[in-house]
Image 1 (cartoon, rainbow, N blue to C red):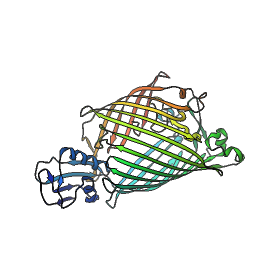
Image 2 (spheres, one colour):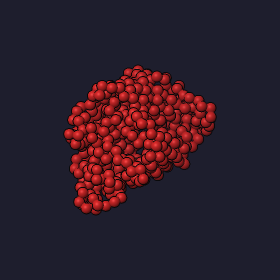
Image 3 (cartoon, rainbow, N blue to C red):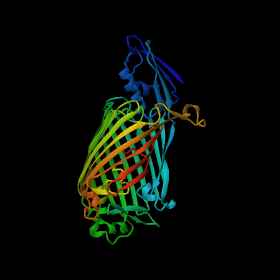
Image 4 (cartoon, helix red, strand yellow):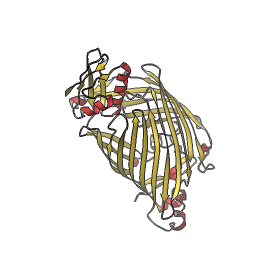
Length: 455
């Protein structure tokens, strides 16, 4: 579909017509909003604004490709879009073990889990979305949510409401020798977690946001697991619940307030700009007794430097600290999710906080605008953007106030590693990452496979 939009009062270096190609569902008003275009009024043009417009349009996550044609005078600017699929499935899968390296030792197929998240994108052409999540296998989960995006480029709000239930036959109940100690119930679920997350964001201007999150959580743990480590629950559980059978339930209301300043380029894998996330979170916890408080402070900063068209540097610094009545689930700091020193994926460092930094040199193996053509998809989606980046990296980190420091010696040390790997990206955000890193503490190379950004 081609749309030609007219305005009046032509001026030098201004745009009075927009020619939008490839919009099948997205409403033109979404494009107006990001460019600051109003029919009937000319739009100032410059090369720097062209780059900003392209970044904003790509950030919408509605398009696999956005190409703004060169402006050669006249009064028309042409923008060519390749919309994403309206229904987008993000596959999920993994191992009940710590990671691929740990699972490979026994190769138990029964310990795999798989599923995915279905996103109904661009609902009614207005960028709103529905979210469905389902996971089956050793771990199970079901979730349902709705998202309402920012409706303007500045001074506007967005919403996300998401409910989810997760059940596990196995859970980590403690750490000894920096290894997670798993407890398993083959004939039942040792952990049952339900939570409702409500998130509100205010965009002051394109690069700066305020985020407020409210989370209502019911955390259920089988009594037999709590008897192994009473720190799994609040202290009230130690007084009158030791003789109960089944799940012990702890309720938590979490309120988080934070900010984001994000100037990264979103056209491809980030190679320039920075991102700073910071905030505080209050936990109000109860188990049939008084409310117990905990507080979390966190700051995460990432910076990207472009060296050439194919070379770039990336660095990250993270600091987090928790205080108050901290149960063991809140002591999981380094070695979880994206926060780990590569080469130590099989170890955990628990405590009240952490300091972590990462540095990487990246080289683009494939040139920009590389695409695959499968020939089996609808014409609008047959071109699949693909990127591949070679990385050389170094990590260093340390946990603060280690948990059971006499049983977990790595928690008392500053850890570091170096290595190299490759990131492959499809559709700009579907990532497959392989790392080969050297662990100096154990004098060995460690291979790992992940599906998210660690930097």
